[in-house]
Image (cartoon, rainbow, N blue to C red; front, top):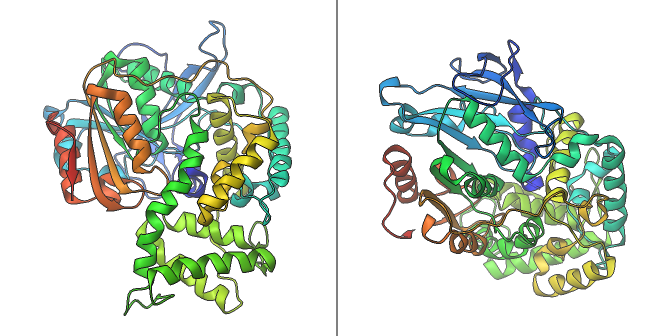
Length: 491
């Protein structure tokens, strides 16, 4: 789910604190239809403007009620050089990009900021757009509940019970909107936004789950696309969708843990936990097993104990960015001494409820999930044997195993039909969107795309955890339209 481990922090920092200084509304066609007003909220660039856009809740029903999508922008910094609008498509599902024109958008080179209005948005269901909420029991909002970490013996019985509770709450409290939250509908909303912006074509920079949104948009509206950058790419398999993204964690962790182990065993490192990378790995596995048997009290955490799965989740979260390695090392050292580390700060419960509802709606409405506990149990056992660091979680039953609704339409199949205007950028070692999945998207797109593979570690490549070579290739494409002549490896 943004994976769930990161999206709540993004929402807390962006859309959840963003307000509007004035109302706005728009129909869905024609130029200059958004009623822009000043934004309010901490840390925003004073140039950032906000508006709202009305879109149908149900695109298949001409009489569908409308919902509102919150939108933000910073206009081109050089109108004479303006090319159009660049959509900043967030990760998730359960993230928004409302603050991104003021945030990561300002890391873009001047040539790109001159060429485009930078446009953010809160996807349908995400506050301050028309929002959904499942009113879950707070105990079910913990990350080790939302992600299907199995019991110490590998059982998925508790995961299935959590799925039934969560799905039932969303069916009762999520309202009609939760049934219409999907990637395809987000793409349709973006095309309404394109039209309301007065653009014949739109450019985009999609990150993580946003790469799937960008690919689906490019499939549904191929001739409305200008320059599309997909950064940290999801496997596009339309028969499995999020099931494959969850499963990818077992490969992603194996791709990335050796980097942590090398760092954590380096002489002179003040956070060193072992003498060799092999000892880091074996020590981590022993420590997780010890916590499975004898958890530590962890007051203020959800749940309030540091068990093996809480340690594994800390590991998974820390592998998103090498800057987070010290957090994992400090946790390992604290647990060895019989103490729990400080509880990580979490967003307010209202934000967690909203993020979870959007994530649940998207992943369960995009594709049907099996409902057989026995099938999940078999898959989890196989995963535990092959990938002990993730203990079977990537093949476990999420809430969709008990989702009461069938998908309203088939998931969009990504193909090689359409303009050749996509650039993929992908770190070689990415715990959340591994290189193996990016290569599948690259093959599916065929001659429509070129991929830049970056010899770097961490999630999010462009202007984040990548390298100068990859950043130059993406910046050049956005500013000039020139892509590498063929797939490029940036060492």
